[in-house]
Image 1 (cartoon, protein in one colour):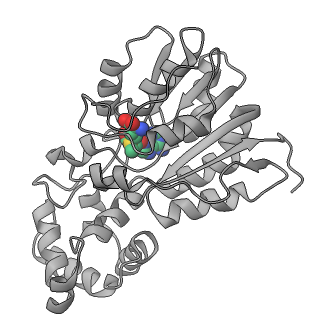
Image 2: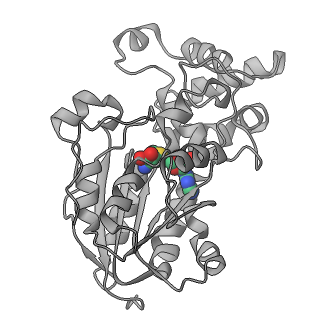
Length: 309
Ligand SMILES: C[S@@+](CC[C@H](N)C(=O)[O-])C[C@H]1O[C@@H](n2cnc3c(N)ncnc32)[C@H](O)[C@@H]1O
């Protein structure tokens, strides 16, 4: 087995892979394995995976965002790497195309990469200046701007409550509806102004996070149907695609996702839980990469293809 990566290793992409060393350890890699990186992003985790599985192993990297696949292809030029534009939830179709019946390891590092967040035109972050899009795959579905300009009051409140756990969901929704009757909400600045106008001054002053953090998270989850992809993958796709005794590792960034993973791994007729408590970044990683603070890593071994319930 090759040496484990050092947390401080320099990375050419702006995205710093989170919990890198811990993830590689949980995946228990060796040469010859077939590994799926279901959220290959800029290839940070994959670069280390390929070192561990060597040239006899095979790596399949998936991403819903074609821009991220371009980043990944620069970092992963090896012949035994296949990159595909796909959701991890559609892994069975990818394996069919590659004539593979199963894989030995699957990693998914959920959420979005720093490269996406900083790309102003994608509208993922409140500190950019672009139009409000937020789709991982811009060729499909409704953008965040289309969603907030057309969704009903009840739908918007539910999105902000369910996906953002936002306390001011009703007043933010009222402000959105008032504003969109005057002119469409199209940019990040439009949304930031609306959110700031709907939250009480005292709360704005005391808030450590940007007041729109939860609203952006909620819209991104809704626009990309993120929880539906996680739920389908963890309960169906991954157990179907992993070989027996294969390992699944999942990195989540908020409690909604982590809850789905935790619940799935509690099924002891299907999974041997390798992390009874989630692994979180060490203080040094949190300091070097503040975006890692909310990360949680869970891993489990598939012990049955036919669970009892
Ligand atoms: C946190 S980044 C991954 C970073 C990567 N591990 C690295 O080290 O560079 C998450 C990536 O997942 C992608 N993504 C989100 N949902 C996805 C899905 N359902 N299927 C495939 N990729 C997805 C995003 O486009 C983004 O590139």
